[in-house]
Length: 120
View 1 (cartoon, helix red, strand yellow):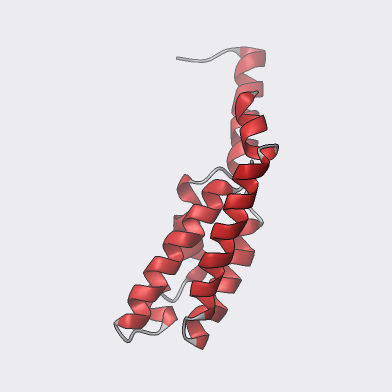
View 2 (tube, rainbow, N blue to C red; view 1 turned 90 degrees about the vertical axis):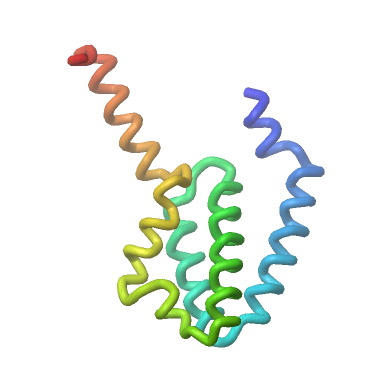
């Protein structure tokens, strides 16, 4: 229960996270146009899968900013960094994040094992 209060009712933490988010979005605004566009599309797409407080998703986005800054500095286009299948790139990005899909999978497995027991 304390993690709930820490993530959702800790106003100092929330304010600090908002300040950090603004700093990170300023970094996005400094990227070339193709990187900005791709970042915002990826950000929008991945937020649809976020669950919990969303802090883990924000950290993934911040890492993506680092990756995009490096790609831009090396003269690459955004699509060269993500690859042609941007959706697959997104899947790989969020594979370790807490997502609704992951929550649903856990619930499904838990409910079935609770009802019928484990086969282990």
